[in-house]
Image 1 (tube, helix red, strand yellow):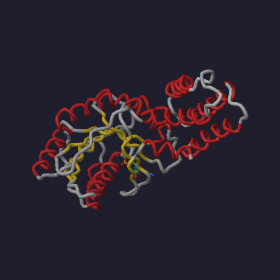
Image 2 (cartoon, rainbow, N blue to C red):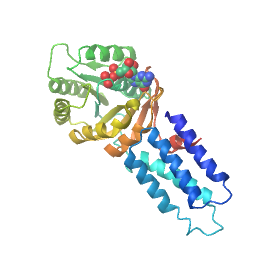
Image 3 (tube, rainbow, N blue to C red):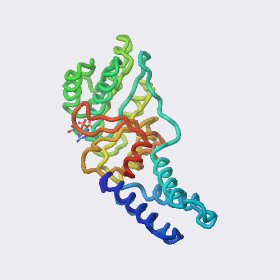
Length: 296
Ligand code: GDP
């Protein structure tokens, strides 16, 4: 189920509840079951959905609500709040400051859109007057450096990488050092991915992180990975200190629920979403407007 459909299904469930003459236990349960079904179909992790349902029922205790209470409003508000809570880990991520050097390391599986997102992130800040730079520490995938170089050149962003060097840690450290000397305020380290989660990848991420001491590690996730999102995000979080999430390919037919799972797994907020292949198809992510839009 794509996000727009998910929003539609939830809105419909709420509308149906609102149309009922009396809101009793059965009407509330029907509404919550409908929402549960929609969320599961959108690949939100089962445990998250179950917790949400339990929380809403705890908040909306029909017996305790006096006749004068607007039950519909209270239920709607509880649903809105619970959806927001799913996407809000409770603390903001580290935010780089313009004019002050920050190192931001990107991690994620191959094909997640990591390299594209690194450039989008750099370009977004460059437009706002920052001095970003890109470091290609992906020595695993042939062509990775060329791709980053191409993107960076197009956006006129300085870059660093090597065709010869095979040690990602060495390149990452050299690149970060160079751009620190050049007074760049946003040094972005693109790392390698693999097709699947494997020990060698996580060990490499740990080493690059240890050597470059990033201020922020961003986990990049393809929105279409579905139920695998929770485990994948958690696996990265266990090897590096993931502090934020960027969800890519939100323009496609993706099931958006994975984003909610990634937030839960990493206890980190989604800060941007990718909405296309182009450099400027990139949006700041805000929980409340997102959920409002979702609910129509
Ligand atoms: P990496 O292997 O993780 O570095 O992934 P890439 O950056 O090479 O991206 C893989 C593919 O996904 C490329 O074809 C990108 O153009 C595409 N891609 C990345 N982000 C988005 C997005 O937000 N929307 C769409 N439609 N495609 C994207």
